[in-house]
Image (tube, rainbow, N blue to C red; front, side):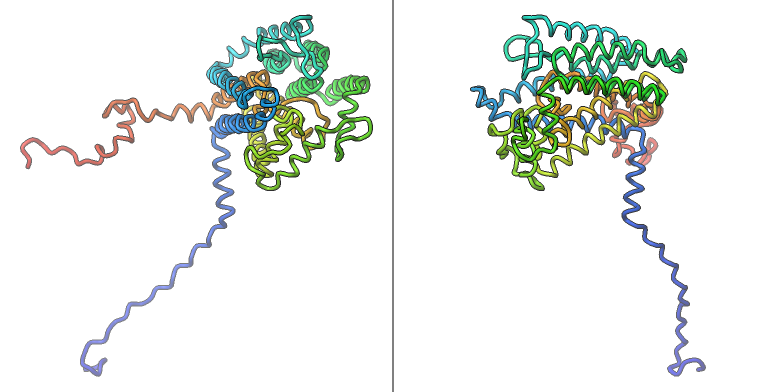
Amino acid sequence: MSGSRTGRPPVQRAVRRPAAPRAARENPLRRFYLRAQRAWDRPLTAYYLILGGSLLIIVLGLVMVYSASQITALQMSLPGSFFFRKQFLAACIGGVLLLVASRMPVKLHRALAYPILAGAVFMMALVQVPGIGMSVNGNQNWISLGGSFQIQPSEFGKLALVLWGADLMARKQEKRLLTQWKHMLVPLVPVSFLLLGLIMLGGDMGTAIILTAILFGLLWLAGAPTRLFAAVLSIAGVLGVILIKTSPNRMARLACIGATEPRSGVADCWQAVHGIYALASGGLFGSGLGASVEKWGQLPEAHTDFIFAVTGEELGLAGTLSVLALFAALGYAGIRVAGRTEDPFVRYAAGGVTTWITAQAVINIGAVLGLLPIAGVPLPLFSYGGSALLPTMFAIGLLIAFARDEPGARAALAMRQPRFGRKRGAGGPQGPRRWNTMRRRAPAARPSGER
C-alpha cells in the first residue's frame, strides 16, 4: 500500500499552532504602587487614618508612660503604676469625648464655639487668682482640683481658639467679608492676643507658640495676603524676641540647641544632652521595654516632655520612626479633610486642629533631638498629662466627624449594612444577607407530589 511500508495508514500529526506571545510580566513594584494608590484614593482613607493613627498613638503612649514613669513614681514614694493609672483614666474620659465629638453634627460644634471660648478665658483668668492657681516648674498655669489632680486651662484654650476662629472665619466668608483686611484681622487677632496674654502671665511660652501657630494657620487658610501675613508674623516675632531676651531661663534654653555636654557656659543643658544620650543608646531596635537607663533619675521629665527620648532608647530607631509615621499619617489625613470639603467651617476647623497637633509634635520632637529649644510642651496623645490629652482627643473626634461627613465617605458608609441583626430571609430590596449562603445555594423546593 502506498504511503506506508507496514501497510498501516500514515499517522496524521496535528499541525502545531504558533505559540501566543506571553504577556509581559508587570513590574511588582508598579503593581504595588497602583494598588496603594487605589487604596489611598478611597473615600474612607482619611477616616481610617485619623481613627487608626490616633488610637495607635494613644495605646503606644500608654505603654511608654507606664514604662517611663515607674522610677519617678517610686522616687516620690508612690506606686509604680501611679502615673499610668491617671493617664489611663484620662484616656477613658477622652475616649468618651472623642466618641461624642465624632457623632455631633457640625451645627452643634459651631454652637459650642463661644461657650468653650468663654469657659477657657474664665479658667485662664482664675489661674492668676491667689489661692486658686498653682505653679508647676516655674509656670503659673495650673488649677488644683484636689488631691493629685490638676488642670491646665491653657490646653483648652487651643481647642477654644480652633472652634471659635473657624466659626468666625466661616461666617465672614459666607458674607464675603474676608476680602477686607480689617475683617480678616478683627476680632480674630485681638482675641488671640488676649489668650496669649493670659498664657504669658503664667510664663508658659511653649503653649503660646502653639496658639500662635494656630492663629497663622487660620489666617493662611483664609487666604491672607502676603503683606498682611508678614505683618502679623513680624509683630509676633518681635514680641517673641523681647520675651526671650528678658528671661534668663529662656535664653539658657536657646543656648542648649545642639549642645553635646551637660553644661555649656552658664546654661545648664543637662536635660537636652541626656535626651540625646537616650536616643543614641537605643540603636536600631532599642534595649527593650522597661530597660531604659536614662529614666533612672538622669533624664528629667522622662514621662512627659521627653517621653520621645525614652521611646528611642527602649524601642530604638524603629520605634521612633513608627511614631513619626503615625503623626505624619494623622497630619496628612487632616490636610486631606480640610482640602476636600466644601464647608468653610469644616475647612478652618480641620486645618486648625491639624496645625495644632503637627506644630506641637514638631516642637516637642525637635527639642528632644536638640534642633529646637526646650519649650516644655508634651507630645500630643503620647505624653503623660490629662489636661493635654482630653482636649486633643476631642479635637481628634472633630476630625473623625469631618472625615465621615465627606460626600464620598458618607456614600461609602451608607452602602454598608450591618452583618448581623436581620432575620433570615428578611433581606429587603437587596435580597437575603450574605451570611445566609448555604440556604441560597440549596436547590429550589420541588412541587408538591414530586418524588
